Length: 274
Image 1 (cartoon, rainbow, N blue to C red):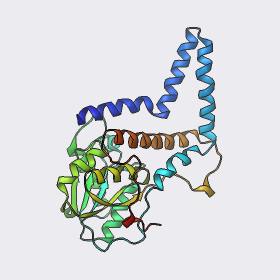
Image 2: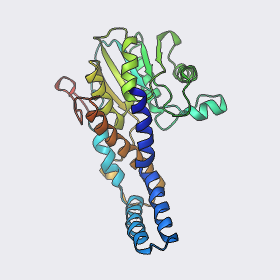
Image 3: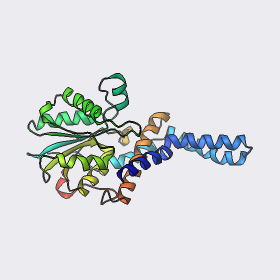
Image 4: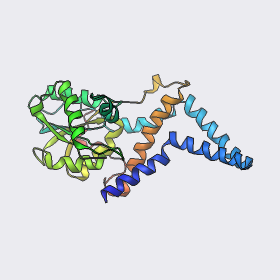
Protein backbone atom coordinates (compact mmCIF):
# COMPACT_ATOMS: atom_id res chain seq x y z
CA UNK A 1 0.00 0.00 0.00
CA UNK A 2 2.86 2.37 0.80
CA UNK A 3 4.37 1.64 -2.62
CA UNK A 4 1.09 2.51 -4.35
CA UNK A 5 0.77 5.74 -2.35
CA UNK A 6 4.34 6.72 -3.27
CA UNK A 7 3.95 6.06 -7.00
CA UNK A 8 0.50 7.68 -7.27
CA UNK A 9 1.63 10.77 -5.37
CA UNK A 10 4.61 11.20 -7.69
CA UNK A 11 2.51 10.79 -10.84
CA UNK A 12 -0.20 13.12 -9.53
CA UNK A 13 2.34 15.80 -8.67
CA UNK A 14 3.77 15.57 -12.20
CA UNK A 15 0.35 16.72 -13.42
CA UNK A 16 -0.55 19.15 -10.61
CA UNK A 17 2.73 20.99 -10.20
CA UNK A 18 2.09 24.63 -11.28
CA UNK A 19 5.22 24.72 -13.44
CA UNK A 20 4.26 21.47 -15.19
CA UNK A 21 0.63 22.51 -15.44
CA UNK A 22 1.61 25.64 -17.36
CA UNK A 23 3.44 23.52 -19.96
CA UNK A 24 0.56 21.03 -20.15
CA UNK A 25 -1.98 23.81 -20.76
CA UNK A 26 0.25 25.49 -23.34
CA UNK A 27 0.59 22.16 -25.14
CA UNK A 28 -3.16 21.65 -25.06
CA UNK A 29 -3.77 25.15 -26.42
CA UNK A 30 -1.26 24.56 -29.21
CA UNK A 31 -2.99 21.33 -30.17
CA UNK A 32 -6.31 23.21 -30.28
CA UNK A 33 -4.76 25.72 -32.69
CA UNK A 34 -3.41 22.95 -34.91
CA UNK A 35 -6.86 21.39 -35.23
CA UNK A 36 -8.44 24.81 -35.90
CA UNK A 37 -10.14 25.07 -32.50
CA UNK A 38 -9.11 28.70 -32.19
CA UNK A 39 -11.81 29.70 -29.72
CA UNK A 40 -10.90 26.84 -27.37
CA UNK A 41 -7.21 27.78 -27.64
CA UNK A 42 -8.06 31.37 -26.68
CA UNK A 43 -9.97 30.21 -23.61
CA UNK A 44 -6.80 28.43 -22.51
CA UNK A 45 -4.12 30.88 -23.62
CA UNK A 46 -5.63 34.14 -22.38
CA UNK A 47 -6.32 33.08 -18.74
CA UNK A 48 -2.96 31.28 -18.69
CA UNK A 49 -1.10 34.42 -19.77
CA UNK A 50 -2.97 36.54 -17.24
CA UNK A 51 -2.16 34.15 -14.41
CA UNK A 52 1.48 33.91 -15.54
CA UNK A 53 1.89 37.70 -15.54
CA UNK A 54 0.30 37.87 -12.10
CA UNK A 55 2.65 35.19 -10.75
CA UNK A 56 5.63 36.95 -12.31
CA UNK A 57 4.90 40.43 -10.95
CA UNK A 58 2.96 40.08 -7.69
CA UNK A 59 4.36 38.49 -4.49
CA UNK A 60 1.47 36.00 -4.39
CA UNK A 61 3.84 33.21 -3.43
CA UNK A 62 4.69 34.91 -0.12
CA UNK A 63 1.01 34.88 0.80
CA UNK A 64 0.74 31.15 0.05
CA UNK A 65 3.87 29.94 1.82
CA UNK A 66 3.91 32.36 4.77
CA UNK A 67 1.04 30.64 6.68
CA UNK A 68 3.00 27.39 6.47
CA UNK A 69 6.23 28.98 7.69
CA UNK A 70 4.65 30.90 10.56
CA UNK A 71 2.57 28.00 11.90
CA UNK A 72 5.46 26.90 14.11
CA UNK A 73 8.37 28.99 15.35
CA UNK A 74 11.63 28.23 17.07
CA UNK A 75 11.38 28.03 20.87
CA UNK A 76 12.70 31.15 22.59
CA UNK A 77 14.22 28.89 25.23
CA UNK A 78 15.55 25.46 24.34
CA UNK A 79 14.74 22.70 26.85
CA UNK A 80 17.45 21.70 29.31
CA UNK A 81 17.29 18.06 28.27
CA UNK A 82 16.26 16.24 25.11
CA UNK A 83 16.60 12.64 23.98
CA UNK A 84 17.81 13.44 20.48
CA UNK A 85 17.67 15.70 17.44
CA UNK A 86 15.63 14.50 14.46
CA UNK A 87 16.70 15.88 11.08
CA UNK A 88 14.52 15.20 8.04
CA UNK A 89 16.21 14.64 4.69
CA UNK A 90 15.77 16.75 1.60
CA UNK A 91 18.64 19.15 2.10
CA UNK A 92 20.96 17.29 -0.24
CA UNK A 93 21.00 17.09 -4.04
CA UNK A 94 20.83 13.35 -4.56
CA UNK A 95 21.31 13.09 -8.33
CA UNK A 96 24.09 15.68 -8.46
CA UNK A 97 25.84 14.09 -5.49
CA UNK A 98 25.79 10.70 -7.19
CA UNK A 99 26.71 12.16 -10.59
CA UNK A 100 29.80 13.96 -9.31
CA UNK A 101 30.70 11.63 -6.42
CA UNK A 102 30.53 14.47 -3.92
CA UNK A 103 27.99 15.54 -1.31
CA UNK A 104 26.03 18.50 -2.71
CA UNK A 105 23.64 20.67 -0.70
CA UNK A 106 20.28 21.75 -2.12
CA UNK A 107 17.83 24.55 -1.35
CA UNK A 108 16.97 22.96 1.99
CA UNK A 109 20.59 22.67 3.06
CA UNK A 110 19.80 24.78 6.13
CA UNK A 111 18.47 21.57 7.69
CA UNK A 112 22.07 20.42 8.08
CA UNK A 113 23.14 23.79 9.47
CA UNK A 114 20.27 23.66 11.98
CA UNK A 115 21.39 20.19 13.01
CA UNK A 116 24.94 21.43 13.54
CA UNK A 117 23.76 24.36 15.70
CA UNK A 118 21.66 22.09 17.92
CA UNK A 119 24.36 19.41 18.06
CA UNK A 120 26.73 22.00 19.50
CA UNK A 121 24.11 23.10 22.05
CA UNK A 122 23.46 19.48 23.07
CA UNK A 123 26.88 17.80 22.81
CA UNK A 124 25.60 14.45 24.15
CA UNK A 125 22.39 14.20 22.11
CA UNK A 126 22.21 11.69 19.24
CA UNK A 127 21.44 13.05 15.76
CA UNK A 128 18.71 10.98 14.09
CA UNK A 129 18.69 11.61 10.34
CA UNK A 130 15.84 10.27 8.22
CA UNK A 131 15.77 10.48 4.45
CA UNK A 132 16.07 8.18 1.47
CA UNK A 133 15.53 8.66 -2.24
CA UNK A 134 12.24 10.26 -3.30
CA UNK A 135 12.95 9.48 -6.95
CA UNK A 136 10.83 6.91 -8.76
CA UNK A 137 13.73 5.65 -10.86
CA UNK A 138 16.43 5.47 -8.22
CA UNK A 139 16.32 3.68 -4.87
CA UNK A 140 19.64 2.88 -3.22
CA UNK A 141 19.77 3.33 0.54
CA UNK A 142 23.53 2.85 0.85
CA UNK A 143 24.29 5.90 -1.31
CA UNK A 144 21.79 7.98 0.67
CA UNK A 145 23.50 6.95 3.92
CA UNK A 146 26.92 7.94 2.61
CA UNK A 147 25.77 11.37 1.40
CA UNK A 148 23.98 12.19 4.65
CA UNK A 149 26.90 10.96 6.77
CA UNK A 150 29.39 12.98 4.70
CA UNK A 151 27.43 16.22 5.08
CA UNK A 152 26.64 15.77 8.77
CA UNK A 153 30.25 15.02 9.67
CA UNK A 154 31.40 17.92 7.48
CA UNK A 155 29.33 20.34 9.58
CA UNK A 156 31.05 19.12 12.72
CA UNK A 157 28.92 16.23 14.03
CA UNK A 158 30.96 13.22 15.09
CA UNK A 159 30.06 9.93 13.44
CA UNK A 160 29.47 8.17 16.77
CA UNK A 161 26.45 10.42 17.40
CA UNK A 162 24.72 9.63 14.10
CA UNK A 163 21.69 7.38 13.69
CA UNK A 164 20.78 7.30 10.01
CA UNK A 165 17.60 5.92 8.42
CA UNK A 166 17.70 5.84 4.61
CA UNK A 167 14.69 3.81 3.44
CA UNK A 168 12.03 6.54 3.68
CA UNK A 169 10.71 8.05 0.44
CA UNK A 170 8.32 10.64 1.88
CA UNK A 171 7.50 12.39 5.15
CA UNK A 172 5.14 9.67 6.42
CA UNK A 173 7.85 7.06 5.94
CA UNK A 174 10.40 9.33 7.64
CA UNK A 175 8.63 8.89 10.96
CA UNK A 176 7.50 5.33 10.31
CA UNK A 177 11.08 4.15 9.74
CA UNK A 178 12.89 6.35 12.25
CA UNK A 179 10.60 5.44 15.15
CA UNK A 180 12.22 2.01 15.79
CA UNK A 181 15.63 3.73 15.80
CA UNK A 182 14.76 6.27 18.49
CA UNK A 183 16.88 5.86 21.65
CA UNK A 184 13.74 6.38 23.78
CA UNK A 185 10.34 5.89 22.16
CA UNK A 186 8.57 8.13 24.68
CA UNK A 187 11.37 10.71 24.75
CA UNK A 188 11.43 14.33 23.64
CA UNK A 189 13.10 15.23 20.35
CA UNK A 190 13.90 18.48 18.59
CA UNK A 191 12.67 18.30 15.00
CA UNK A 192 14.67 20.07 12.29
CA UNK A 193 13.10 20.57 8.87
CA UNK A 194 12.15 23.41 6.53
CA UNK A 195 9.67 25.88 8.00
CA UNK A 196 7.10 25.30 5.23
CA UNK A 197 7.38 21.54 5.83
CA UNK A 198 6.97 21.73 9.61
CA UNK A 199 3.13 21.59 9.91
CA UNK A 200 2.88 18.31 7.98
CA UNK A 201 5.93 16.87 9.74
CA UNK A 202 4.59 17.68 13.22
CA UNK A 203 1.17 16.28 12.31
CA UNK A 204 2.70 12.96 11.25
CA UNK A 205 4.95 12.82 14.34
CA UNK A 206 1.95 13.35 16.61
CA UNK A 207 -0.07 10.72 14.75
CA UNK A 208 2.75 8.24 15.39
CA UNK A 209 3.08 9.31 19.06
CA UNK A 210 6.55 10.82 18.66
CA UNK A 211 6.99 13.83 20.92
CA UNK A 212 8.74 16.58 18.94
CA UNK A 213 9.63 20.22 19.55
CA UNK A 214 9.70 22.08 16.21
CA UNK A 215 12.92 23.80 15.19
CA UNK A 216 12.10 25.25 11.74
CA UNK A 217 14.82 26.39 9.34
CA UNK A 218 15.11 27.21 5.61
CA UNK A 219 12.57 30.04 5.34
CA UNK A 220 11.49 30.94 1.80
CA UNK A 221 8.95 33.76 2.29
CA UNK A 222 9.53 37.48 2.74
CA UNK A 223 7.82 39.45 5.49
CA UNK A 224 5.67 42.44 4.53
CA UNK A 225 8.39 45.16 4.43
CA UNK A 226 10.23 43.04 1.85
CA UNK A 227 7.25 41.96 -0.23
CA UNK A 228 7.27 43.95 -3.44
CA UNK A 229 6.22 43.88 -7.06
CA UNK A 230 8.99 42.62 -9.31
CA UNK A 231 9.51 40.55 -12.44
CA UNK A 232 10.95 37.26 -11.21
CA UNK A 233 8.77 34.61 -12.81
CA UNK A 234 11.16 31.69 -12.20
CA UNK A 235 11.78 32.65 -8.56
CA UNK A 236 8.07 33.10 -7.83
CA UNK A 237 7.13 29.91 -9.67
CA UNK A 238 9.67 27.90 -7.69
CA UNK A 239 8.14 29.04 -4.39
CA UNK A 240 4.63 28.52 -5.78
CA UNK A 241 5.56 24.90 -6.56
CA UNK A 242 6.80 24.37 -3.00
CA UNK A 243 3.77 26.02 -1.36
CA UNK A 244 1.22 24.24 -3.57
CA UNK A 245 2.96 20.90 -3.01
CA UNK A 246 2.81 21.39 0.76
CA UNK A 247 -0.87 22.43 0.86
CA UNK A 248 -1.74 19.41 -1.28
CA UNK A 249 0.40 17.24 0.98
CA UNK A 250 -1.41 18.46 4.10
CA UNK A 251 -4.77 17.68 2.48
CA UNK A 252 -3.86 14.23 1.15
CA UNK A 253 -2.14 13.18 4.39
CA UNK A 254 -5.21 14.23 6.36
CA UNK A 255 -7.57 12.36 4.01
CA UNK A 256 -5.43 9.22 4.24
CA UNK A 257 -5.25 9.40 8.06
CA UNK A 258 -1.52 10.03 8.16
CA UNK A 259 -2.25 13.11 10.28
CA UNK A 260 -5.11 13.75 12.71
CA UNK A 261 -5.33 17.47 11.87
CA UNK A 262 -5.45 19.11 8.44
CA UNK A 263 -3.30 22.05 9.56
CA UNK A 264 -1.49 21.16 12.81
CA UNK A 265 -0.62 23.98 15.18
CA UNK A 266 1.54 24.63 18.22
CA UNK A 267 0.44 23.04 21.46
CA UNK A 268 0.14 25.13 24.61
CA UNK A 269 3.30 23.75 26.21
CA UNK A 270 5.37 24.68 23.15
CA UNK A 271 3.91 28.13 22.63
CA UNK A 272 6.94 30.02 23.98
CA UNK A 273 8.01 31.14 20.55
CA UNK A 274 9.57 34.10 18.82
